[in-house]
Image (tube, rainbow, N blue to C red; front, side, top):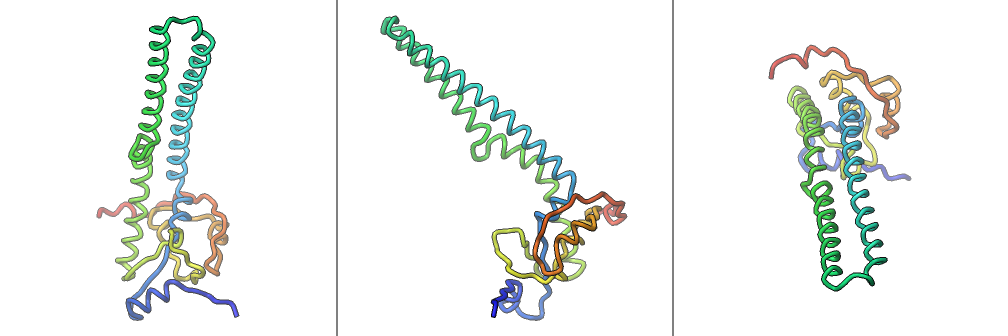
Length: 201
């Protein structure tokens, strides 16, 4: 007999059977928001531009180093030392730029926060609103590090989150999610007019 582990049931056993719960798949939700895909494309393009800039700098340093090696035997010691220091400075400058662009808390992280956080906040606010309106005690994220081996599809409120945000998944996307709680591919959703989104908070 196959073991079916329902993590939600384990949570309920801990916090009490009287509490209500649901789950969402934030990866599925975000993949159905065109703004998120556009932001990801913009982020990827910026990352590629910075990577190209760094590659050009390191290639230039390599070219200068090879030139120095070819000419070194002709140079007096003072000029050798000067050229070596110049190469070291250029290499250090390139490494510092690499850290500035791609290091922890660097420009890429800041750009990601600038582009993604407003969209992620909208999703979180929609989840919170559904939780409050339907009196869920907690909502689990199926796409996170916690592994759910099985979730009954009736507990997945991801589509409700999208509808609250003003998006309606294509039929193929909803079908792909499957009635057994397993995730398939995702199709882009279309923006729909949702009067709830115009209500002031």
